[in-house]
Length: 217
Image 1 (cartoon, rainbow, N blue to C red):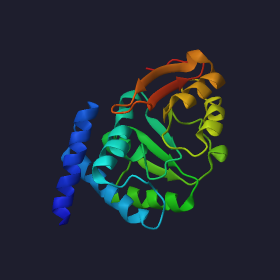
Image 2: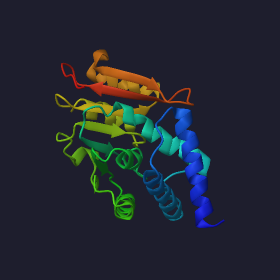
Image 3: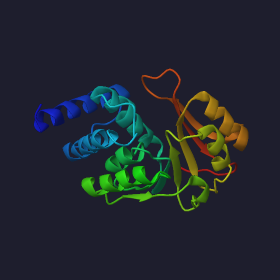
């Protein structure tokens, strides 16, 4: 299959996934950037365990559309950190679609961080940066939005991370109901500001938390 045909296939798969998720279609340039990211992910995945979801249609839905679905919760945030970014989800699709927001991918694995840096250069993402650091050692206080989608040991780490939220900060988590309850237990039930089932899922949600006494548009 030629590169041109592969590109058309990815664009078609992504367009269909975005329609099914009720997400506004991307520009041709934005879709081309995500197609380039997908191709790089597949290439690097041969040597580095980035993802088990590699089939184009599945990746378009479960990686890209799901990541972009979180865009509706960005609100007034202008800085965001993706905790445990891995292959770059949700931060790369969000950075491509929201050039007005500065995204930082926090990744403790040096090889995965190198991949993300290569993607930044290949996609010319000026609003995207990479931090190769452990969550426990990283200063989260400067970000408007903390986001995470596939963090290892999430049930252990995220309740503690939530307890570090500063006034005005939000935490956006792609997760199951068990993690929602764990974070509510850490912050209090009234910390949960938004909870929405991810389209085409029966058990995965996007949950948005704030520390008590804070409000953000």
